[in-house]
Image 1: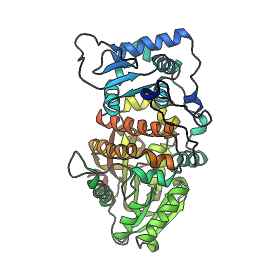
Image 2: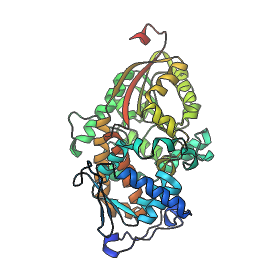
Image 3: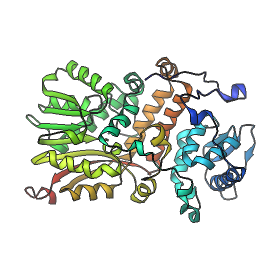
Image 4: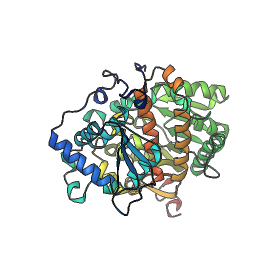
Length: 436
């Protein structure tokens, strides 16, 4: 996919925002229509929330809003509003989608983007006064019907993200091309430790699933093939399925280069279309793309495809249950621009949906701090090489979108709003496994 480019001119250098391609980014290039009253209400709510938080707000002209007494005035990250009117107008119309689009439009910046977003995530319940939360439906957009993860819709949703460009992902991922949380020996992490930490994560997943010589393994969500390669190197026979043509092509080459092509089959297939029974089933951060409507189908497939005595290992990003319910039908900035059709589940939802099909969780370990460090390393790598991103045909607006996505995700883990967990599931009633 090739995106048209536009000059990325800093606001501070020119006194104006850089141009945004209206064909590629229509909702960023143009301000939404909004009444003066709606914008004023948004401004009042935003200022009321921000003034209570440990951060500083500056206008582009250097004007500083003084926080209320009791709130640190010289500590915390700075939110700099280059265009306060546009910032409040977008939020008044589109809520947090408008907040993200305002960043893409260069209407605001921060001296520490992750720290700012961490403050906001930590105080997420303070952003809207409690009496107004019941009116969420008046301003929060519903998810587009076309983003539903039906068999046809899932292919389109996956391709909109993972088929952007293999070269793009290679710019910020380590040599394993693992696009999920690593598991480090020590924190904070370094770039040099990332590949070993990704292998540590993969190996623990394979251990949970009991993968060894002769294991018939099904992997749901191929990525770029690293887990399949390491499973084959253990002596397993692997079927791995993906909906990304770009990923499949590169995974096949990497599997061949690793010398395990005879043990690994890579199919372009939806998990609901897979047949057979497998000694082990592994799925790394794929459930987030399924969507709540299809979680029963996902867990039914896991149970149906599992051979007697086998084990399922799942790595999943999670969020608290009440927050999951609040966002389940909401069209967010992430679902609009980054991951259409998905929803991060709660641990309660995973437990309920797995139990409903006869799967019991026998192991559950969280390591959200490790995801925050993984994302930090990816983000730093990405922002340090803008010329290579531009050379692939992506423009400055895309770079700001991707930086915000990585920073937004990192902040979620640093604020404990998000977690990542590795789980082992077995069929209930099998040799007492479920009671372990």
